[in-house]
Amino acid sequence: WNGVSCSIFRVVERLELQGERLRKRIPLDEVSLLQSLTDLVLGDNIFEGTIPSTLHTIWNTRSLTKLDLHYNVLDGIFPSELGSFTNLEYLALSGNQIGGSIPSEIGRMTALTYLDLASNLFTGHLPTEVLRLTSLKELYLYENAVSGAFPSTRCRHIEV
Image (cartoon, rainbow, N blue to C red; front, side):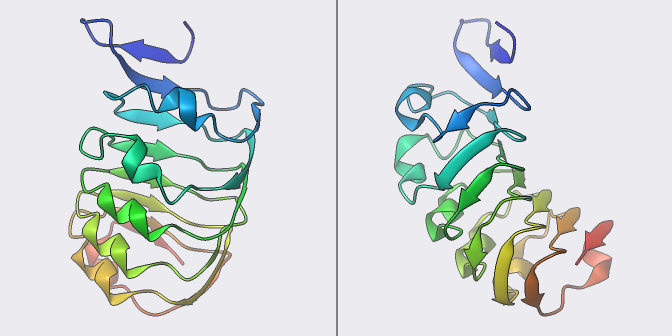
């Protein structure tokens, strides 16, 4: 199937349905059955609603390394429970309507190499816990109302 990648044991590992014009809410009941999922790419669709705070109870937080929900119609806040995804390397939430402050729990996501929160409605100070993200190479925060400093020597590419 197009956009579905399986292991040699026929277990779904990657679900990449970017730009498929999918609508409504993210089908968490169905996606939650994919316990070996490493990559979930649902960007550039028309998913609406909030990112559920129960996301960490749905998936094995150790297997997911890529979560891409950019350019949808998601709103609400950045759930602090996303901090449970400590093996997540790639997080893209840009181009949505997610607001509020960036939670300090983001500092627990120490495997992150790519973090894109641009073009949302974030406000407040960048939490100092972001300094714990020592693997971070790319950080995008532009088109938000976030203040604070991040040492430019830590990332090869920063857009604030």
